[in-house]
Image (cartoon, rainbow, N blue to C red; front, side, top):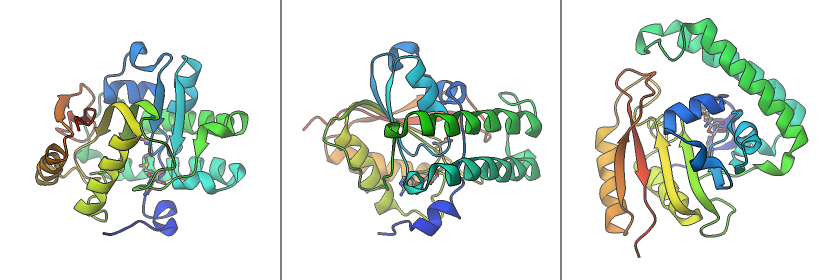
Length: 235
Ligand SMILES: C[S@@+](CC[C@H](N)C(=O)[O-])C[C@H]1O[C@@H](n2cnc3c(N)ncnc32)[C@H](O)[C@@H]1O
C-alpha cells in the first residue's frame, strides 16, 4: 500500500481552503445535518468549514497531517496555497464550469476569505484541529455522527492507490456512527474514477457497509455531480 509522506502533505497535495457555503453545496448539507451533531472534516486542510459549522452549533473536529505545524506557519501556508490553487484553476479554466464561482478572481476571493477565517479559528480553538494522517485516525469507534471528506480521495488517485482508498474508507466507517460523504469522484484533472469507485463499493459491500451514489447540485469539474455515501456498517 502506498502511504503519503509528510512531504507529500505539504508539497504534492494542495492545501485548499473551502468555506461552509462550498461544503453545504458539495455535500447538500442542511442545518439539521450540522446543529448539535458530531462532525468530522477529514482532510480539513485550510477550510473554514470547521469554524463556520461550529458557529452554527455543530461539534466539529477537523483532521489533517498539516495540523502538526505551528499555527503561524499554517496561516501563511493557507494563504500561499490558496494563491497556488487559484493560479492552477486560472491556468486550466476550461476544465471547470464557472457558475458557482463567477471567474478565477471570485474563486480566489472566496478561498482567501476561508483561509483567513481558518487562521483565526486555529488560534481561538486549537482543540478543534487534530493532526492525523489517513488511513489511521486517532478517534474511538463511532465518535462522529457525520464524516465529510472533500478533495483527497479520488482527487489524488494518481498517487494514492486502491488499497489506500479502501483502508481510508474503512477507517471513516469505523469512526462514524452515521453517514460518511465523499466528494469528488474525479481526480484533480477532472478524470472520472468510475472503476475505482465501483471496486471500492464492491469491497465495502462485502464488509457489510452499504454505499450509495447521491447527486449534488455543486459542479466545478465538468460532470462531477455525484458524492459517494457510506452508510453505517451492518455487521
Ligand atoms: C485539497 S485539500 C482539501 C482540504 C479541504 N477538505 C477542502 O476541501 O478545502 C487536501 C488535504 O489533504 C491533506 N492530506 C494529505 N494526505 C493526507 C492523509 N493521509 N490523511 C489526511 N489528510 C491528508 C493535505 O494536507 C491537504 O490539506
